[in-house]
Length: 392
Image (cartoon, rainbow, N blue to C red; front, side):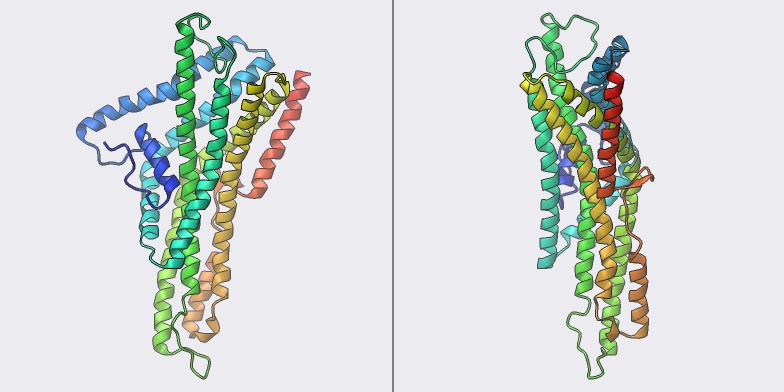
């Protein structure tokens, strides 16, 4: 089985995410040999236990051991919540594997077939914008990992319970190396899972931009007579172009619906846990002594990284809705008054359909938007004040 993904080449972030998820066995295509199918469950379980399984058991054990000590429980719990979301995302992509591959292939086919110079510029701009968003998240993930690794002498990266004394050699070295490698692989796979969700929405935004470009050129090379009308031949040509645009519009809307149905509950889990993690991280940051520079840097970069991760989801969801609504404005700006009555009706129907925005939701409860992002920040701050009062 090849390590790198063979699809998703039209968007760099989609391709990278699929390649990482394929490497760890979470998201693999159907083209497997009989031997690979038999080995795959053990291969996936090996990666799962190495990345999250062992650490979840160790942290749950530590949480039971320190139950009642609020500061220590807070220190243990915020990473444990991240593990739970990671497990939920893994289960989600495995369940919706076929639908995810279908959406990726559809986007690949349309973007790779784009031959117009302006269209290629739109694809490149979309690719660049998505990379900027996700590389920013990756930068803060790296900052957290490096500062996390700078611990005091004979101290592990984070609290965990082990059935042996980790203060002695070689138990300490084994636990330290495992925690270091597990955190790095966890960060990479978790970022890939998020990148896949966000990048697929970015591809849909790009496809809507290409659709608007096609609509703006709907009347290209059309001649207008003295009565300010177009000929029957040109009217038929415009009708055929419009038919293609309507088909593409419907396909994009169906793709957004598939993406929403595939990831809506994982986004809900992420947002729910993000509220808790943001609250706990801010609480931890306030409790850390300022002379522990590395710990302060870690908590600060981790907090900002979580904020940016939530922002990226809300940003993409917000602009997806905006792009879908702009289709109606693009249709209205066309010289529809030159067309025949049937063609005007078709344009009117497309405008009416475009007034219903394509949306990404978190479990169907809240629509991803910049307003949703601000609400999450406010709720996290409210929980932080409650936690501080409980501690006092």
